[in-house]
Length: 220
Image 1 (cartoon, rainbow, N blue to C red):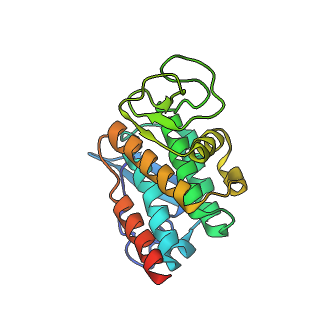
Image 2 (tube, one colour; image 1 turned 90 degrees about the vertical axis):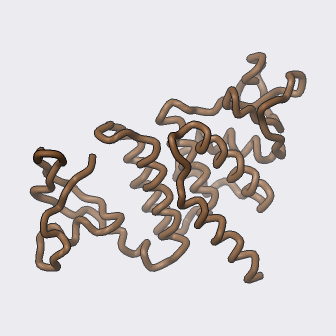
């Protein structure tokens, strides 16, 4: 929901520390004339350390933006909220490759909003598949070797296996996946297209992510 925190910008306000960017807390709201108003709040974790690293800040902002795009104002989704909080803790810990975590988070959000991708059966004929190297954007799933390949994207078999694992594993298990740079690029491109085609707008933070990736390459 959209809320108003009156006087929160003042450093002495009891709402100041609980309304900073990325703050996680308990909030008591009341319905105003046009928006909800924060009456009381209790901080659980500020996550302000995510602001100290540009990459952490960018990915955390992207996760928040994706949540905002994927949900309507007033909509409840406890599963998505838990995914977001878990992702913040994982970003902070640096225990998971940040790009792999982002792809896992994207898959979880797609699943939670009715756009779950099918990697177990051919999305064209229904035949069970153990591996695939073509993804259909029209039917949101892998395509077997015998079916016609249109409206989709060729990917490496390793990328298909990574998608299948990440779609079923928890965010916390993403550290078990070690991906090559090529596979990371393929997953980024594929999921970026899926998100852009199925939600009402494209996350702008992705442009920043691409800039960061190019910046890293130029440093080498």
